Every structure is written in structure tokens, then in C-alpha cells.
Image (cartoon, rainbow, N blue to C red; front, side, top):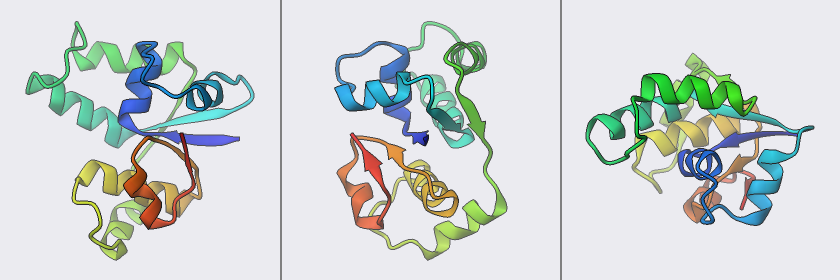
Length: 128
């Protein structure tokens, strides 16, 4: 099965953080599942690292590629269809990074691994 990761799910998995739910951890670790990391997550983490809101202990430029490769995740680019789909989304959520993840989840029909219950109001399939 394929899953799209939300930013916190990606970081919590990589950091082995107990805040990640057991079902999310199992789905991400399952070798038969394909786990996708959106370029939007990389962008968000890079911005938050530069603003000192996230401490990776190194630059996002080295952390992200290494962790994506080491965990055998696949990168999901942001297609025009994803970007323009955001226009049709209700304004339940204002965070632009979450909105593009929601759009990607809906356009590509991917369940998203996230603790964000607000995602449910968009009709995405969410695992937590």
C-alpha cells in the first residue's frame, strides 16, 4: 500500500519519537508499503530549520536526502494538478503546507499518515 507522510509523522518516525502512533509506525516500517514524502515537507522543514523552529542537528540539505534514502522513502513532487487543486479546497485549514498535502492526497488518492484530525473534513483517508 502507498502512504503519504505529514511532516510530523516523517520527523517522528526518523527520530523514533514515541509521539508517533503505533499504527502509523507499523505502516511506515512495513517493508511492503511504499512511503511517499512530499517536496512540500522538505520545503516546510527547511523553512522551519532556518527559522530555528526545528533543530535537526544539521542542515536540512544534508538531513532530508539522507533520511529519505536511508528509510527507502520515495519523493513526491508537486505537480501542477496538485497546486491548482488547492484552489478548490474549502478553507477549513489555512496552513499552506498542509493544504498542498491534502491536495496531493486527494489528487493522487493516497492515504495520509497524520495526527491532524482537521484533515478529515477534506475527505482524505487518514491513518493515525
